[in-house]
Structures are given as C-alpha cells and as structure tokens.
Amino acid sequence: MNFIEIFKSSIQSLIGNKMRSLLTMLGIIIGISSVIAMSAIGKGGEEKITGNLANSGFGVYEINVDTDADEYKSIYSLDREDIEDIKYNIDGIEAITPSIRERISIKNKTGPDVRRMALVYSTTPDFEKVDRVNYIEGRPILSIEYEEGSPVIVIDHLTAKKLFNSESPLGKKISLEFRSLKKVKEFVIVGVFQHPDSAMNEIGLSRMMPTFTRIPLAQMERIKGTKNYETLVVMPEDPLMGKDILVRVIQQLESRNHSNIYDYEEKIPRGSELKSILETLNIFILFVAGISLFVGGIGVMNIMLVSVTERIKEIGIRKAIGAQSKDILFQFLTESIILSLVGGGLGIVIGYLISNIIGYFINISPIVSPAIVLISVIISTLIGLIFGVYPARQASRLNPIDALRNE
Image 1 (cartoon, one colour):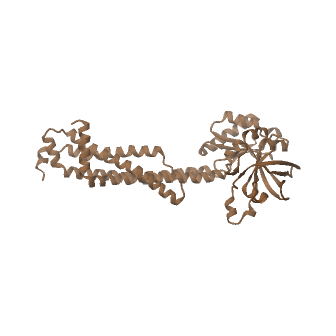
Image 2 (cartoon, one colour; image 1 turned 60 degrees about the horizontal axis):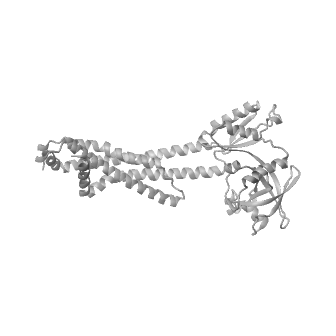
Image 3 (cartoon, helix red, strand yellow; image 1 turned 120 degrees about the vertical axis):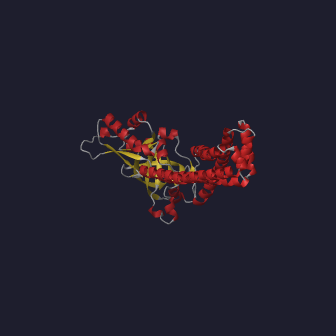
C-alpha cells in the first residue's frame, strides 16, 4: 500500500468510529487548549502588570552625580555631549534624557487671577518615552519646538480644569514663576494630558494631588542659564538587562570625565526582579497545563490499543490478502497522528476563545504567542507519533492466522 491509500484507509476508519475518535481527541483538545489559554492569560497579565509599572517608572534608572562628594567639581556635571557619547558607545538603551524639575507658581494670564503651585518637568522626545502620558486634548510638544526651545507647555487635565473651568485651555497663555531662580516666563498651552494620579481624584483626594506641567528642555536651559545636569534618566530596551547596561554607562561616564562620583538607582526598587518572577510564574503555569498534554497522550495510546483489540480480525484479513506488517504499522501511526493534529487544531481554537472569554471578565487582554501555537502543533504531532507507536507495533506484529481465529 502506498501512503495515499494508507491515509484514505485511516480517514475511513476514523470516520467510521466517530465516538471513539472524538474520545481519543478529547484529551489532546483539553491539553492544547489549556496550554494556549494559560499562556495567553499569563502573558497578558504580565504585560498589564509591567505596563502599569512602566507608567510609574518600572525598568527606568536614574544616574546621579554625587554633588556632596569631596572631589566634586562643576566640570563633572553631565551635559548633552555625555548623552551622545553614551548613545554611541552603549547598546541596548531605549531612551536617555536629563531629569530637571522645578517648583513653580502658575498664573492664568487670560482669566481670573488664579495661582497654583506646580512642578515643571524639562522634557525631550526621549523623556516622553520614559514617562508616557495620555493626551486628551491638543498635542504633545513637537520635535521642532524641542530643538528651538519654544515657550510652549503641556499641563495635566485637573490643573487645566482648575485654571480655566470648562473652557478649552489650548492656545491660552499662562505665566510660570520660577521662585528659586527669581524669573517669570510666559508659555502657550498646546496640550492637555491625563493626570498620572487621576484615580485619586475619583475618591476625593484631589487637593493632595500635585500639579504637573512639561516644557522643552532647551527652554529650561535658557531660564536656568546652564546646560549641565546632575541627573540622567535611562530606560534600557530590556528591563532584565538594566543593571548590566547601567554598570557599563557608569563606567563610560567615569572613563570620559575621569571621576567616580556617579551612581545609579532604579526608580521602582526590585522592578526587574518582579518581572523575572512573573516570567517564572508563567513558565510554571505552562508546565502544569502541559501535564494535561501528557495525560492526553496516554488517552491516545489507550484508545488506540482498544482499537487494535477491536480490529484484530480486520488486521488478519488484510494480512491474509497481502498487506505487510509495515502497512499495518503506518496505518495505525497515521490514525494516531491525524487524531492528534485535528485535536491540536481544535485545542488551539478553543484555547483562543477561552482566553478571550476569561480575559474579558478579568479585564486582561490575552496575548497568544505564535511560538506557543507552533509548539502546540509540534507537540500534537509528537504525541500522535510517540504514543501511537506501541499500539501500531502491536497491530503490525499480529499473526494473521491467530487474528483470523479471533472471535
């Protein structure tokens, strides 16, 4: 018999015993769907947790100049040349930006005399990557505005409401008083972003919430009269490699500036360890779900052994009319593989549906990894091959005379 005939014969046999075929596939379906669903929910949960942490500084490090050190000199302060040197020599950095913030007093220039204490951050395009916010009106600061240091500003939506009530603040001017610098500067509002701690406002803690504003770094440099910084913020591409990258950054700064007064700290302590724990937990969940695949494989072997017992006479007749042992072996192996592949395909679809249903109720967006899907298909095939070998060998080794005598 050639392969096509064996395949057709296997399909006919499986269709002719629908219930037995379904029961055989059931273990594979449950196993694969469990792996797909648990993987998708676990990965989605990990992304949600780390995503929320990222908004608060997870995976972000601060490099500081120890200004209290005895050997400190102003020439050891950091500048844009240091940033460019780090970008050029150190791989694996997603963003690096100075961190400058000042306490200010905001005054509404176009309305009633409303003053509000606030924090102003000097930002760059990289700062927007490090400390992401959602803009709900207007736009972020543009690249050309960063380069030219334009007097533009973006403010949080709670501050906008306090300063302008129900009016749109876009295009309005506000005055910023830098008290420590004894300077006042007018800015035009170009965007409004959601306050990072807006959830506190929903429970009545708005009075305790700080006001946040952002202006271009070049504008802050003009106001302060210096282009030196004491703090840089660095975000590695891979949070798990963060400490290794930061060590290289510190070594680069020490080599460039001939000083060892630089150190770093993670904005969320032990954040990398938390991500590692989440990944390990996902692997453990997949391992537990994978046990059901092994159980499903045992089910395939048991049902196929039952099939051999039920079809002893059929096997004897086929051998009597010329079928060879290898033909019988290949047919039973083909049946096992077909059952496993069909069960695996159904398991992938069911697992995807289950993960989306569970994700809907627990507010998690499941992430189905193509690698997990591919591995599931491979495992399905191997299950059919490995657990189908023993029953197939048992069938192929039957003596045709003894098989024909079987009642």
